[in-house]
Image (tube, rainbow, N blue to C red; front, top):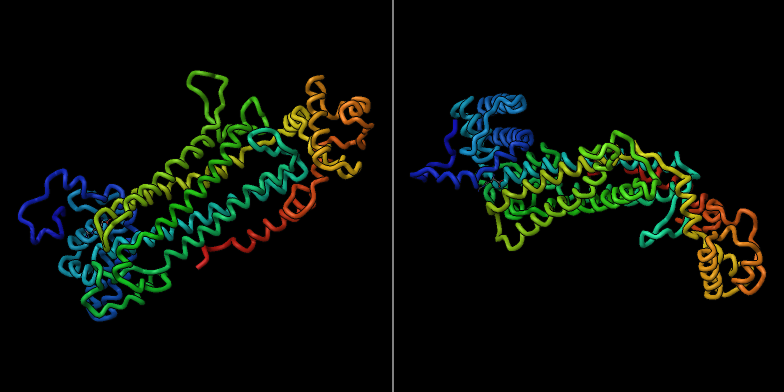
Amino acid sequence: MAEKLWHGRFEKAPSKITEEISESISYDHALYKVDIRASLAHAKMLCSVGVISSEDFSAIEKGLNQIESEIASGKMEFSSVLEDIHMHVESRLIELIGERGKKLHTGRSRNDQVAVDTHLFTRKALEEHRKDLTALLQKILSLAQKEVGKIWIGYTHLQIAQPVLLSHYLLAYFWQFARDLETLDFVYESVRFSPLGAAALGGANYPIDREKTAHDLAFDAPYPNSMDAVANRDYQLNYHFCALRLFLHISRFCEDIVIYNSTEFGYVTLGDAVTTGSSIMPQKKNPDIAELLRGKAGRVNGNMQALITNLKGLPLTYNRDLQEDKVYLFDSIKQVRQGLLGMLEILNHIHFNEERLLENLSRAFALATDVADYLVREKNIPFRDAHRVAGSAVKFAEAHHKRLETLSEKEWEKVAGYPLNFPQDFFSAQASISRRQGYGSTNPEAVSVQIQEAAAFLEKNVGDTKK
Ligand code: ARG
């Protein structure tokens, strides 16, 4: 079987290292299903325009279907002599059905063949990502609904800033991933044209019907330019950027979780399902899955950079450099799948510990801004002066090992220069959160509006990938 299909004009075999560098079967075997699907569409079209007979087509169809099950069941042996998946399928077809099999490649080149395969493969991946991302969004929304009323701490500079609702914090990630869903749909849009029929670069010498193959393979239309069709990798650049941005969101969420899961913070506890042990320290329960997902963001970025660097300055049209694109694409597709499913699993096994949060809020004087705003509102004091009074109160409390809520009326007078007392419950985190106002804030009413909007977003966007 292992004879090269292009050997006609050669006298000698390529050297070993040439073969090793040339081969892509070690990874592009993943394309076998889409390759066969595209070949079937191509053969059907060749038959419909009279380039091959219906007997040819039936034999090709039967042969291709058999090859698909041979590969699926692991029966086909791959060899670097045959370079890639396209050559493996075609050689086996000729082996199976003889002369008729040699007609399949009429009016086609591996340049448009690999392009159409990769388009189909990317589209399928996007459809799967969309399902996984939707499940993640649903999970975040349901946590936001379930944990409604619970307190969380908002940080800036990794310093305690203000109390917020846990639901508000979770929804901040919801909206990031919601934008990723929109971006997935944008990427999908960029894979809507069929390269098939562009042949090597200038089109085929046969009366082929590109609309027909495009339609059969569920593309919107053929590429309007055959040179662009075989050279274009923009949809992959879009894919990589989308994957990377999604991974930036995953890695930030995971970093939060790694920090908050530490003994020092203790805001969250991760279940056994998403943690692993140490081989030496028996007490350890490490958040490895969150760490690995955080780390994978680097890998996904690397894949994007690799493609960018590969494409820079490439002359039109097809160049063999482009074979490498699949290494990056396939890897990022795998990482995105793991990232989405892993993130979901972490959220399936996370517990939020409110007591630790309440304790830290009080220790960190997190309601100092509330004090300043109270002085502005109730005492008509300019904000800058109020800010100074609240700051002095923090300094005083810290020096005397007190908290803002335990300062006496006298102590407030000492700090402010005038008598001050605060309504009962002023210093509770809940009260602080309720004082926050306006659309998009952490005020419980605003958060319930947000929950409705998140649910409406999902309702509108769930379903199949938009076409
Ligand atoms: N395996 C090749 C790739 O992935 C197929 C195209 C080869 N075309 C060529 N002209 N040698 O790009």
